[in-house]
Length: 264
Image 1 (cartoon, rainbow, N blue to C red):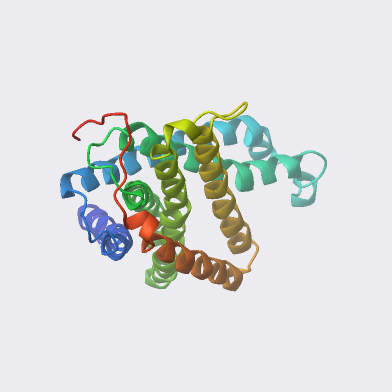
Image 2 (cartoon, one colour):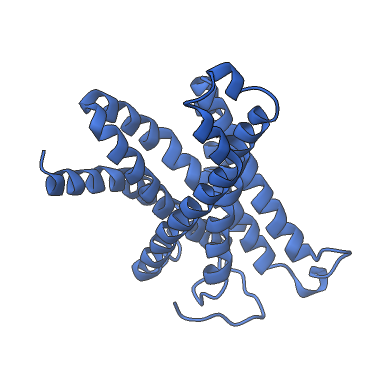
C-alpha cells in the first residue's frame, strides 16, 4: 500500500469512531442544537489538546523513564523492574495520561465553551466537552492505527474494534462528565457562587475534572491489566447514567447566566 493511500485510509478509519459517537450524542441535543461551526471548532480544539498532551507526556516520560530506557539494553528485565523504577513506570503509564489528557481537554472546554452565546443549557456544556473529547480521540486513534497498520490487517482490525467501542466512548464520557459540571457552575445562582475557600463554581469545576480523571484512570487500569470485560461494564454503566443525565429536565431546560458570552 502506497504511503499516501495508507495515510488517507488511516485518517478515514480514525475519524469513523468519532463521527459515529458524535452523531449519537448530538441526537440528545434536540431542543436547540448547537451550530455545526461551533461543533467543528470544539473538534479542532480536541485535536490541539491531543497534540499538546502528546508533547507533555513525551517530556514527562523522558524525565522519569529516560534513564531506564537507556539501560534496557544493559540490564535484565527483572533489574529494570526493581527499586524505584517500578514506581516511575507506574506513575508515567497510569497516572500521567489521565491527568494530562483530561487537563488539556477540560481546559479547552472551559476557556472557549464558557464564552459561547449559544451556551444556555446544561446539555450544551456536555456537547462541547464531548466534541473536544472526540476530536482528541480522532488524533489518538490516528496515532494508534498508523502503528498497528504495520502489523497487518488482523492487528489493525482488533485495535480498531477496541478503540471504536471502548476507548473513543471513554474519552467522550470522561470529558463529557466535566462538561456537565462546568455547565452547572455556569448557571449557579449568584447568591450561591461564594462559599468558603473555594467558590461553589470552582468546586463544581474541580469535581468535574476529578471525576473525568478517575473515570479515565479506572478504564485504562482495567484494560491494561487484562480486565477488559470490567472496563466495558463500567463504560456501559457510566454511559447509561450519562444519557439519562442528558435527557433530564435539568439538562434540557434553558438557563441564563449574568455574564455575557461571545458568538463563536
